[in-house]
Image (cartoon, rainbow, N blue to C red; front, top):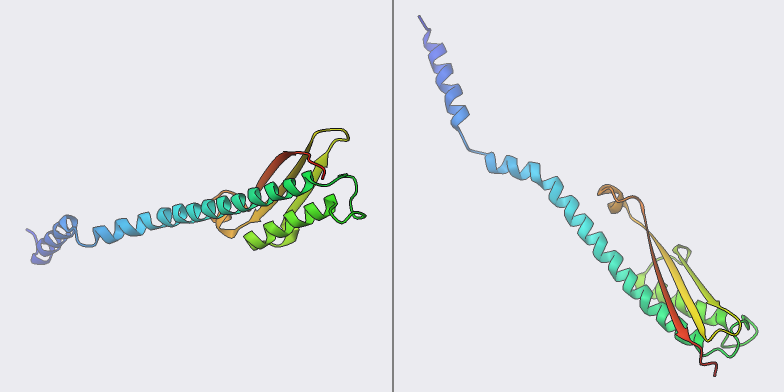
Length: 152
């Protein structure tokens, strides 16, 4: 014969098994970390795309400036030398991204007698949010633009 407390306990267990209260909150708590990781990844991707576009515009402007230099090998002696074009490109990237100049490398390239000049930049992003979503601490972006020499 069953005791009355055993019957009550069995009914309580059946009632708890059939209860759906709090299921939505539990499901939300289980899905929330995944949603936050996706949100962080989307935020960092948007930030990287913004930085890349700013870098591309700066490299294009630097290549146009470099294309007008009479002699690209005239680095610091000439006022409109290649060093000035590189500095302008680096400063534009720093102003448009807000990153430290140490994270940015800019280089001008040309071949003697070649009708084109090339400006390239590389930017390294270090982000804690990228580490959190598993993409690694560093993301490297690069931009290259080639321009025909005008040599005014």
